[in-house]
Image 1 (cartoon, rainbow, N blue to C red):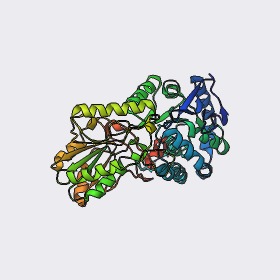
Image 2: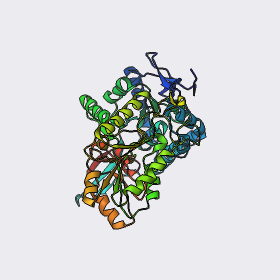
Image 3: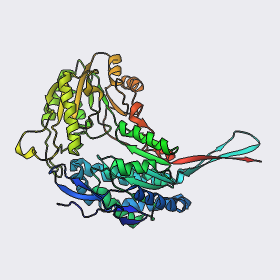
Image 4: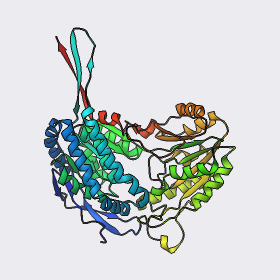
Length: 484
């Protein structure tokens, strides 16, 4: 095995441990298809040990003054930053995402999120409510206690850290399950957390969804679960959790996100924005990717010409090279699903302008490669318009009037992100109010802003993250009525 790291142990109760069963899960390079590391498959008993450790840890953690919790979280951020290059190398090798944007986004976002929520911790205060004149009414915020985060394969460490920072700041103890296809960077995170955090406060259990994930979801001691992934898995989590007890479950479940372009825009600028919004740098494997480009008929052909040239110019190759624009997708199974979506688009009559398959040539025979793909003349009745591909496949449609554009944008079950491009702010705001998406950019794409809530409407999920709303989602409100 050509290991990318020797780290291979879970973190339970402050100790780096193997799984009880002795079973291991091998991580495969998306570039070479060779083994690059391994992680334990946590059993139900392993998950139970993590819950027991978290139950022991959280009361003392919550009892600390918020500023002390903030100090610990800032030290955690410092320790992650100190090993940023190591995490980056492992994560690029394990996911296939290209290194240039990962360097700027993933670990920095994890660190910034820890610092942000550390700063918010002292502000987690209740209210006094003048419900009556003769009594005193007040509220307190208290943590759930033991909570869990199930992380996706596209940004493992970023989501394991950034999406647990609020839970930790609020006084909870956390159990993290990394993705089964890209778990290796989380093993470095386990080492860091062991050194910096109180034992049992931050636990990492690895394994597949059917064994480890199901044990987490069904454990009655875990009161709050957060998940990023597919709608199918999200619904399965809701069902499984409900069979055990009542839990607070938040879900971010992807999207088939529209980018609506009005005719007053510059075609070259739109083409560049469409490339960025599609997130080709991680092969379109992003819940917020703008995978539907809705072009007004007056600008359609000019944008399409510019876009076709840009897609054709994207450089595929080694994700560890700064010269690479597009790497391999995450796994063989995921590659096959993407290719099936392309075949469906061909069968439905979409016009393929570029890509749609595996690249030709001996150098692409090994690895999970899918060409950057562009389809035109895609209509709402086609499967490519309706279904999330989660791959490097951009669908382009055209519209004539605003009512048609809004109807096309809202015609899917998803509602995570959207972008609106126009030089008329009134048009932009009127359109934004009509589009059923939870996070909308005007004349922009992709960017997230700490403090601005992020989350979806419709099938794209429930709950909001990346702001004060997320912090409040990790606590329960207790009302106290004092009869004077």
